[in-house]
Image (cartoon, rainbow, N blue to C red):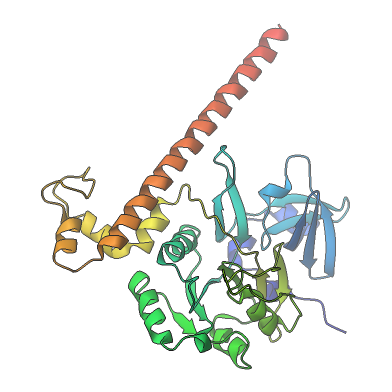
Length: 344
């Protein structure tokens, strides 16, 4: 029989403990979210697995797998959602520019790609921006190394867009694949995979956890898996630690990620600070340090173009989000004033 986890083994730390008041320590139970199901949360506590109902003021979209909540044992409800230590999020589909949570309180994110036509620098830079914006240290995982005559060339391309990001090259189906990722796993630590469908995330997740996280064959014409993970779930890793398995995501729209983009393109950001004009567009202006570096062959022009594109996209989406928040506050103010006038 598997013993119940301890708070430390679940990833609890002083970051969460300091958020609790004396009364909460005595009456409420810390719980780690392992699954989000509309009005219910699947959680783990020191007493084992349980389900909690969401309070009226909290929706399923406000909670991510990996979150910590305080459970009220008397009501079977979530009493409070604790502040996150880290998170990965993107802009949700649609036009309302709201944030969509992917995972929370992750210690390492494995940004997974392959030695195939699927490899795409622009997409990987988006993943890097997401990781940096959410405070999650990234690791590149390059799969299908056995399918390429030059896997080192793919590693060199990874190094060009993330010189300080660790990179691992492997065959996801090989017996030692899980061992290559173990340096980032361990008791109390949580890891997650991000990447397109068909790159081997579920195969690696199965190897790490010992579970059969089912996948099917990949179509050779477009390298996409016919069936992969469709919901985020948290699974135990034998020997300690947790894995949050995530679906493959085709669309990664950015919003409120300026700092993450700057960190993902750190060498260009540093150059931009040396431009003659503070509002330099890094185009034809005189004194542009970025374009000077491009002309000298010190920076890849295509990478600069991708940086500018991501900055423009993020700025546009962030402006939409700010406008939406302002309109929401204005509406709330009008409703409040109308209620006040009606009560006179």
